[in-house]
Image 1 (tube, rainbow, N blue to C red):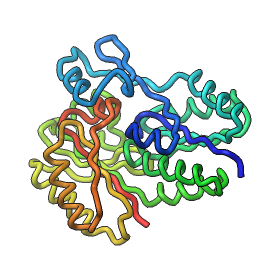
Image 2 (tube, helix red, strand yellow):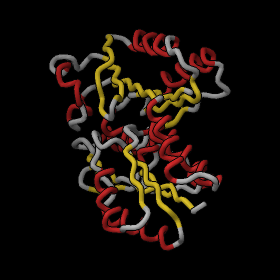
Image 3 (cartoon, rainbow, N blue to C red):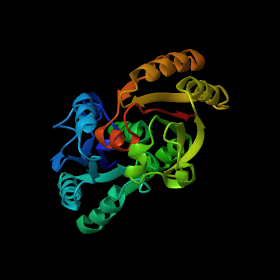
Length: 279
């Protein structure tokens, strides 16, 4: 069986331990704060970025990896004897996957580009499963693509936006345009569905939001395989959800991650999200 290299982008929110353990190549998006560009994987921590964003004169801007970075990675690993499987965040939120496809045409050879339809740990579910299968050395690219499609079809991602300001300024409202207006004090739950954000519900208090999310998971009819929580200065709510979900689903652990700066830029301060996939 051919060697397979898994490539993704930094919005998957992989830890350095996961990157090393599963030998995943990660191409970083960049974030610009007041005219200065940063690599979120090497130049920033979650804490330092949140502090910078709070003091910034304008909303930070995110940029996808340059096409040259994709071409270089695809050519490098093919020269080393790999087939390449490149998995990226939904094209409804970023042009990253389109750039990856263009780069694949330039590089030629055995490069398969996948739109995961997700971001953050919803994207990571597919990336890590693909990397595990690639390491096993007994699966073809086609078999891995089929398996991650199953995970994608059984993934759900919910995000709580405490302030809509960043989401509106960043133009990531998708089908939620109708709720904008005088609702800046509303706590919004959005679901990432078919690659874009859609309004799930809106409430006046975080307590009602948490109850809604807990009930959502209670009503899940399939067995939850894995559930992760991500937050941008929403540690308290993240911990509350983790405790509830761990008990409710009898999971060994519910990992909590700090949001990648790209995600935090658009979700805003205080945002938190959870994502899971079922068998």
